[in-house]
Length: 422
Image (cartoon, rainbow, N blue to C red):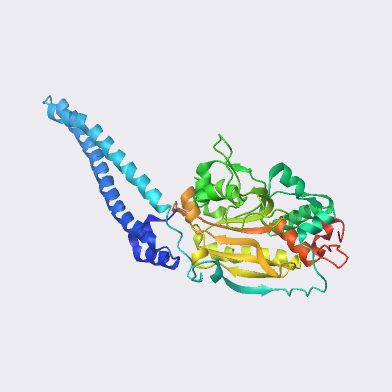
């Protein structure tokens, strides 16, 4: 959630941030918040003064009674104050709720390095690693090759669940598990605690970690239950600290989580009908860090380095794509995607996504840190995909496909698979 103090102290900065995100229509929210905040302060002062008056009158009544004097006037006033306090507090709460709702509409303040651009066409490639191989024969699509080798089944999954689902079989299924172990082992050696989180979350904690539009466009709702299937393990990993105050000496908290993930994938791209790249259900290993504000950009670099090392180990060419201001999500201060080379498609496509949400998520979830002197402030939260296995599988199948239609396994995975090719 957006920090009201930024609007109080520097509304110009907030409006400039909106301009850079091409959301000038929201500047009216900033002006309205300034007025709402003034009214809130007036009501808060009035509420405090009424309570002080109530205490003062109570003392006066007691003193008059001790002196045997008539306290009827003070008693009458004391009887009227509770209703006046109730009405003032009710109005105060209404203003607080309206302010909160408006703050949820404002995007996070971007890092100064974020490139300015209207949409994804203006995202910026900032690094390239590896050299795509020249194809000396015509490659088959990963979905076609999987079914041809009887390593998966898209037809049966569509029959029983609809498009966007799949069966993985035999060695491809084992390769999927190898990718999970590969990523988890790497991160555990780096000092990340391994966690397997719940696959469902209630709405209240979910509102803290996502843009509210995601409830309609991304998440699956459990019918007649206050539960949603998780879209990524990042969400329950961070939400477990909701309404907690963490001692600074316990930071940073570094977690890696594996889970199934579920997404509607509503939008222009749709889902793959006979493939693994864009699906409703997939496996993912996530990285999450909760830290002190002054350390978050250091850990942003660390998370990116982790993901790069994992894909270098898989020997899949990739580039890093810095997301521009107009394409940057509401809760993010900065985002870098790692896109891997898809040899059949002859293009780079997204495999992982790194975000620093600064204190935006923590503020919505109530995650605070406390120093040895008792001073509290909001934590910073970061997340990055380590490996989304379905997309890594596509990368392996397309980049390591041989002329005889066998698929070589990257050396880093041999100890997990027990075989070197499919």
